[in-house]
Image 1 (tube, helix red, strand yellow):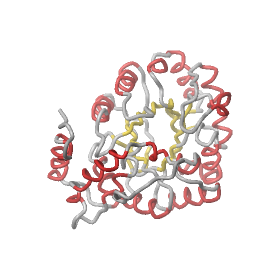
Image 2: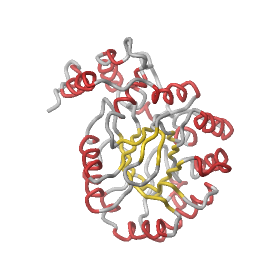
Image 3: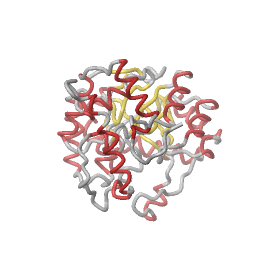
Image 4: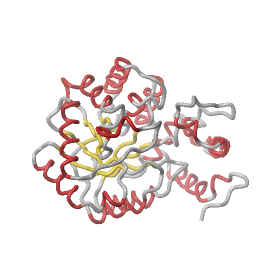
Length: 331
């Protein structure tokens, strides 16, 4: 495993991190707590030291899983978690993946932080992230003042912004980088979906802010396992995507086969190595829900880097929408 510093925070992250939402939310299939802990510890054995969670993942379940997995070796791992959704009051009103109300008041931020610390069985959080903040949150000076106080008290090593849930949120990210002092920016970014990530990464690099990427495989498309016959369980969030997403995605990845033929890497590993050609990206969080995937993704850190020629070819493909038929060419 290779490791990278997160911007100027002094935190060292494993290139391949572990996004814990797959183990606690049920959106990727049911996983018992015992199974989750076993997979988290297996990840550590493979060199994964960065784990990304949220207080709302399973209504605190994800943080408790991390405490069980790493409680006796807290100083050996970097734990990120998130706040902002007031699930303490509104969890019962959630329907599927619908968003619940957010609360960015100083009082709520402190309360949420203290509760996360209890569930994590820790006296500090390495990276505390605003969870899918909209512009009102970025504009809330009191929220950032409270984060600075929590940092000064030693309860946070740094704080950041996790943008989403959709792939947009360009303006929120740019404003946060311009007007606030986050230690990290978490975004959706991958070989097939490069915008607005390119603008956000450029701005983060200019300000010395480290980036963490989630959905690096475009919801599984870049894992290379889908076919036209692939279907998803109704509880799986991918089941809500239009059929065209699958059909067009399969056409696009056909043009990327040159990344794997005789190269000593799978498509999923190549997609991760493409991200790491950008120095500002400290870690990527592939969706991991079984040991086979974990081993493959963790192994990406030992795969050959993409060559300048491969990177240029990908850039040309993206600029021409991967030559997908009957689709508008990107400007």
